[in-house]
Every structure is written in structure tokens, then in C-alpha cells.
Image: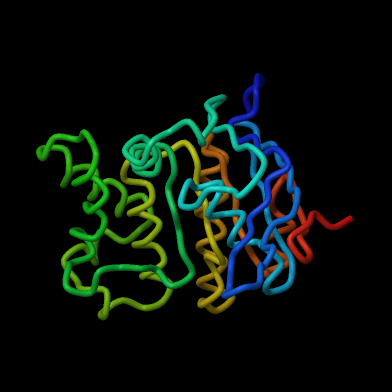
Amino acid sequence: MTAGPPLLDLRRASKVYRRGESEVVALDQVSLQVAHGDSLAVVGPSGSGKSTLLGILGCLDRPSGGEYLLGGTPVAALDDRALSRIRNRTIGFVFQSFHLIPQLSVLENVETPLLYGSFSADEWRPRALACLERVGLSHRAEHRPSELSGGEAQRAALARALVTEPRVLLADEPTGNLDSVKGGEITRLLLELNAEGRTLILVTHNESMASRMRRVMALADGRVAG
């Protein structure tokens, strides 16, 4: 980890959703600081606010109250275009359900984030192939997602998250749909990426995976537990 101000700085953040005339508090006064190169597991029961927290950290959602600074910049001050640029270049997302586009090849799926950034077209294929090689999936580049095993699909999703060389990886139950062997492979890859300097934050129910992060934060009913 590098010294200096936190890369992610969440200050007394809350998130309230309206359902008809009622309100649901998904996050309640949550504060969190994550340094460059840190690794953090967020744990807690279903409905505790884990995915909501990850969405705010990844600039997919905005808090209803409190403040979020990313690299020292208040996220509330950024317009939609700036937020899209951050999601494309600074943050890589890995989801439990992979979210691969079935009509595209694995290689084309990995290239997709490059279409929306400032990368030249000449860079797309070499970058995507290098990321597939990194996760051990280059031999499946021309296959469709439907032809992949669960572990292969998650590795493809991880390659897609890496293709823009983000500083932060956010993973929501990245091993939730995998058996213990395939889940172990994904855990190993994530730990290697963290050791290389990428900041890693993951939501997990897997106690073994959580224990391998430098820090663990538990949520319950939208609040930090313990």
C-alpha cells in the first residue's frame, strides 16, 4: 500500500430508497477509508447493505446523505460524463452473474469497455488478448459465453474488468456461483492483482476468501457492525 490520503473516502454515507409512501434505509451513516493497494472484504447477511455500498464506491449510485471522495475529489461534484469516465478508467467491476454479452465472443466481451474510453482502435485487440492471457483464457478467445464453464466465464469477466487497467477492482460475490476449486482459482487471481498494486474490495459470504483480505468490514441492517 502507498502512503498518503485514502483513495476511497466515504464519510457518514446513507442511502434511502422510497417504496411507495415508505422509506427503506439501505445504508446508515457508514464511514470507510481505503488506501491505495489495500484489500477489503465486506461481509454480512443478505439485505445488510453490502451491494449498495459497493454500488456507491463504484459510482454506480450516489448516497442520499454524507460524502464520498474518490482520489480526493468529491463525487457529488462530478457530472454524469465524469462519472462514466471514472467507471471506465479507474474502477473495474466483477459481478457474481458475469454479465457477459451472449452474442459476442469472449474476446469481443473483453474489448467492450475499450469502446467507451479514449483508447485507439489499434489498442483494443492487443489489450484484450493480453488480459485473457493474464487470466489463463486466451485459448477460449473466439468462443461464446454459452460455451464456457462457470469458472471460465468468471475469468472472462475478470479480464474485461482489467482491460482498462483500473486502479480499483470491485467484486460482488465473485465466487458465489462457483465450486470450491474454481472459486479458489478466482481468489488466487484477485490476490495476485492486489499484490501487484490494485486496490481490491469485495463483497462475499465466503469466510475463507474474506480472511485472506487485509481488512474485513461487517455490515448489519445498513450499519457497520462491531
